[in-house]
Image 1 (cartoon, rainbow, N blue to C red):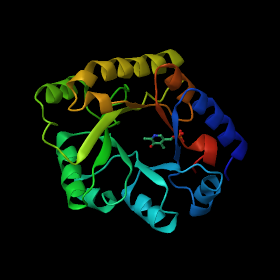
Image 2 (tube, rainbow, N blue to C red; image 1 turned 90 degrees about the horizontal axis):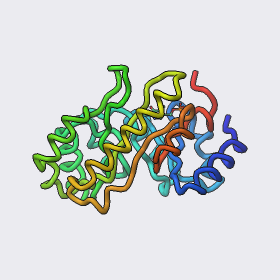
Image 3 (cartoon, rainbow, N blue to C red; image 1 turned 45 degrees about the vertical axis):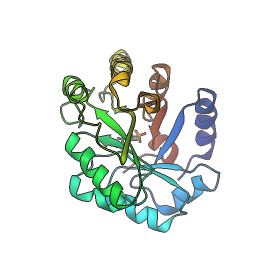
Image 4 (cartoon, rainbow, N blue to C red; image 1 turned 60 degrees about the vertical axis):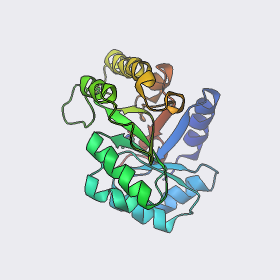
Length: 221
Ligand SMILES: *Cc1c(COP(=O)(O)O)cnc(C)c1O
């Protein structure tokens, strides 16, 4: 179940650095989320649309729900009414669909562009060069119901801390390089990187938002 002591420790650590905690509750029961909610923490992340919608319906409505996992265009409509931040925009086509569904809801949806920084080719995300190309081509300019507020990335699954650090550093460098190319550079402020195993390194490398699951909720089986 929930490790309350760990939660308070991480929150203290992150608050001191002004880093946001997204408590990743995927596969975990409603009761576990409620336990964390009851301590006052209201920011949770899920990686699957169906699970996110079910949990949204059952839990208090002031939770800020983040979608952190791969999103298919045909599922955007289910989360558009309520999602607070989508971390996993990996194509312009997907961003356009979010824009369209957000418009139907009369909302502006905050989004992060996911960048592929790991060596494994299984992880989703823009390649650095294709991201720059689409920004230079101004492909995001006409989208009025989405706000791109930053980047997200996942480091390689490895024990090599130097490699993980180098990947986070690369993402931070890219973040600074693309900021001036964004439609609203002043609103481009978030760098979502760091999970249970590497969030400390991520914070040292400039993360503003960490996505921590197993450290708070216990291992997923
Ligand atoms: C599951 C998941 C996390 C959290 O992983 P932990 O190792 O449990 O902290 C973070 N980000 C994404 C995209 C995930 O899918």
